[in-house]
Image 1 (cartoon, rainbow over the protein chains, first blue to last red):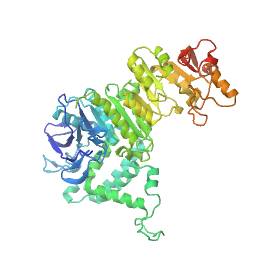
Image 2: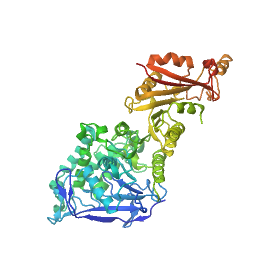
Image 3: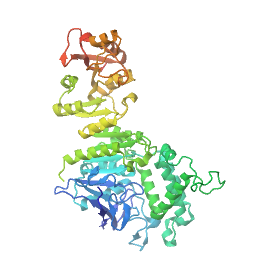
Image 4: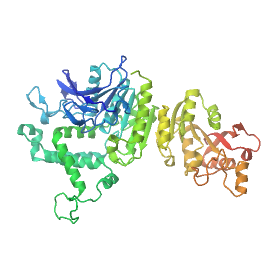
Length: 380
Length: 193
């Protein structure tokens, strides 16, 4: 069942938040959506952390746009694996994003102009600190679970390390304890596309009433390739030519769209350029690059996780080559080294990294079973 | 409950850190968790069994055993159990040395192909189908068939020191001619040297 129509709520935070970079930000907003009811003991709260291009709109249908269904609607809702009949679920749009929370598009109260390039670089840890203030707002001392896929999984992990007593369970899906050189390289290609777009104007394109659309399009195209598996692309597009029904399948010998896969990528890029902010893309990919909790512990993730108390469910997908199963196993190993409770599912799904957003009975069954165990310890 | 479980449980100390390699649906782990307050983890490959373990609230790690136990550090468990799983693994020597590496002690159980009924069946020209070997030759998950004598010959060669042995048939201990009269063998062992 779906949650039906949902409405976001804007929370304002006047007090400055110190950032990892040394900068700080005050008077910022975070947009949240909540589903289900917080119980009297306030121990049934679940925080859902979003990845690169998602938002606080995790589930249900937006009040102001009936076409806008939450990005994890198949996972969160009444009777869904994360059951809103039992849990109070919070989705929060992270600082620096472009869906209502304060970010580069927002007006800097001290200048009266959009932050643009002056928006401070934020990290996964900064987001977690900001999310902790959201928890404080709802008077949630301890989350029953913090959950996320990909970059969202990094936030869940960071929660367990930064606020060990404030999270009972972490659900980390298709994630990694740090980006590889290859991952960073893909991010750099995407950023280069944006930075080299003449409409970028050093990040202050808002003043010029333009958007670096070309850069955003290419960034999304390259990103999208890394979300899908080779097999999945072969299955979806193969070498199909983009042709009208009954038209000749001869080549056109041009650089216009020839193959279906090109058409798909261009469509994805175009759609993305419509709704996403280029500065946010730079910020969030950088947050991905910087995440490396083991760095301060001589690259020893087990040592970085020494204070963790939370129980973990870690899930990976066999065809995910962006954050491959080996990366999830690193997380599992660090948890095992600390004798922490952990379950690990390695789902043999064909859809690459994107599988974490799709409905797969094995994947959803595992998450459901895990949340049923959590629910046994809390009263709705 | 499977007849080897009670015998295995006798060798588990209360509160022990226990890893069951090839744990199936987690019945043994659940029993050890409840009866011994053991801190339990399972390793299993099959999706439906992984789910069954998660539904019991057990720690379950999904992986193929043929690749060894790289996720687990040396001596990180009090006991590592390989219960009726040895015969399903191609990398026999490797998995035995791996469980001995990860556990301070390990427990290995397997169906005894040497039981007289199995021998009689083969002598009469057919592969045995019995309570301990319940599959037809064409649908069995077992890829290695072994006898008590076979295992005891292999153990020292892979660095296993056998500490204790229980042989069962129909749930009853077999003392006399175990390789002929026992259908299930259970060993307590540790890394030699």
